[in-house]
Image (cartoon, rainbow, N blue to C red; front, side):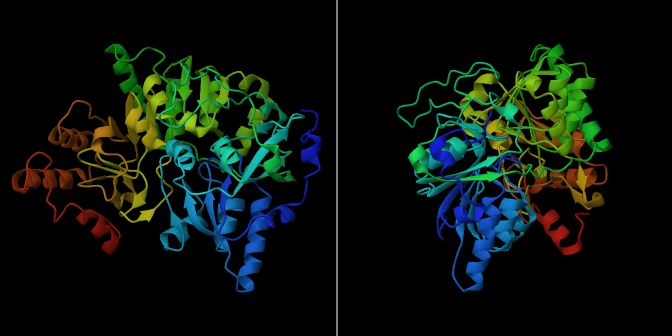
Length: 502
């Protein structure tokens, strides 16, 4: 790219962020770019928040329905939530301002599998999309758009919205040009056709986003980095979790159920995920592939040293140091990274066909293998289910990981019954804590309970879990999945009452 806005007609539609914000009216549904803190619009949401605050000062109502790819950043979710500018939000969030208002009942929030959002929009389940507000890295002379550091649902918003506002961010590296693969072959039932992707690195679309140029009502120039935080180095618990998983993979290779290059990896975001990826390098694995949602620092390092040969994702969620490393070697990374729309990165059929190994964090699991990924004490949302369900249900192997305790030991991540269910026992293959790994494949509920208690529970809580299970086996209404209904959630209530589950 020699010029960021190379299309003459679109160059004439340049305006300030404040002018563009005037085009967004109260009650509108706005599809915004952004996936896990990358590729979100930086300028217009801040201007919009200022406009909304002024409207509220006048006594006028002004709130929007905000749809994105996943979480964004303080300049978008935080700024709009702080001024009361959001009345509905989907599909994933992580901003503390937004979270607090959701849990206070002030904002309606729909937690939804990331792989389903585009289909919901195309089917009309989310209503009419009035405006698409999308960050891009550039506009080509023919009007095609160079995607930014995330793709997310941008294709869907651009296709469906009545009006389009483009933010062209000069801070995003020009070398992103050619890193994306935007597939335009999807359709709704009964007109669907097989998606011709056979390996994670296959390119089946085109490098650019298309847009009906007549819908573009504003082009705003920005110059700001993605607001991405740093992950703390893996702690001892994370390293032990990683060690258990690597040992398990070696066991599966010896048993002939996995090859030396495993299967395409899906890794959630966070310290444990980074520790697991680092464990694969230390375990001597080479030439691996990834079919995942987010590439963060740990995976970028593994791509750089050849541990991972090819990675497909929808977002680059990198620390400032990771961004510097990425930009410095961007020509190399462009040969080993493909960024796709999230309807492809999280597509159930592709996850199933490729045979992904899904590795995701959890809040808690119960003794029978049900997993809660999203809520504290059953009612307070943390972030959302994200893409973990897309991969857990459809992957070759589904792993859920967590330290065995939290809050200095006041909370056990293994409980008699989870307070909220995101992934049922039917979709959970492995539960891993620093204490050990429970392989739940091929086991009945009571067999699962025995191995979860023995392998994963913290010693401080193991006798309590065993006591509950023994009494449930004796006194429960049924003996297939034994529960004492009067006690099943008592651990959570005890924590709310006293600050500890003990």
